[in-house]
Image (cartoon, rainbow over all chains, first blue to last red; front, side):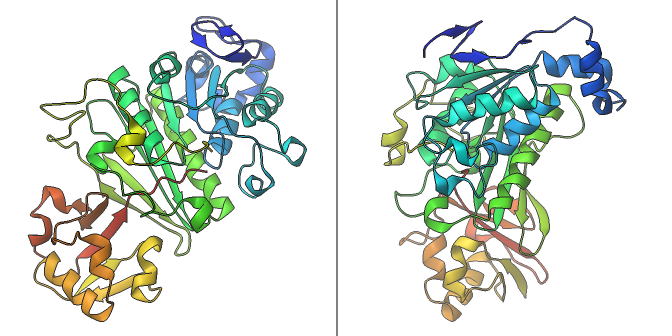
Length: 291
Length: 91
């Protein structure tokens, strides 16, 4: 990383990273008027959002709408981890990136787009793979993590790191015309409770191999943004211990229960995982580009 | 007769159907019955030794069978069976 932004390692931009305890400016009062008028948000809630820090794992299909809505909502610091560059094949679904950004690092595209969406937001970028070596340093400075990764090693890594750091994880996945979303709160179940072991390499096709309806990313990524804001403002009932299933072909939302597993090696009653491991070895697959 | 919701990933094994009706007193019987009509279906859910694959979850009426009686979980008429393989895609 080329610089350090406050207590988070990374490259940052933005003019108003911390407003906690400060009054909203006139421009902010206008920008967030339709939030502030909500009794559940109000001026206090909006200031809470402006003082919040959310990390996006991946700036792709899910990360794009999540980043846009979280920035527009006034989340004060948005972190983005992605080491990929924008490709023409991304643009049917990764709506934060534009044609002019093809070939550029995704994090640069994100920083510029979010600065335009909302100059209140400080954007912290990590143009590097997230790994066991850096995950704690990257994640520790954020309040909530939004997972938009595209591979199993990263999903298990982010899950374990979030649990060990006590960070809420807002998860989402896509497959063709289907999507899923849920929230893992530390101590109330984790990705390992949901899927104790990864599939063998090659057993489950990726989006690149199986395809995905572009607009599906908007549905699930936006649900992740909503769940994140609910967590930050302590609103409603988050998707904790509930996995939301969306089938766009039948236009049907369903839920299944995902309890905490007492036998879970990470968050169970007798955990055996106390630190980050080698996730490529665990999954038998390399970490691919995020997003 | 139970109602099996087949995820996109497994639809090729059931002729592209999104929903399959199936009989069976237990989940294992139900899977066997679907497999007779659609050979290869069971292999997507079970290991060669007959155990449930750890990256494929099966739910009876929204409850994960790992917290019920596994593949011996009873199935009743009208039950909804959901199959959820792990997917990693987010991009």
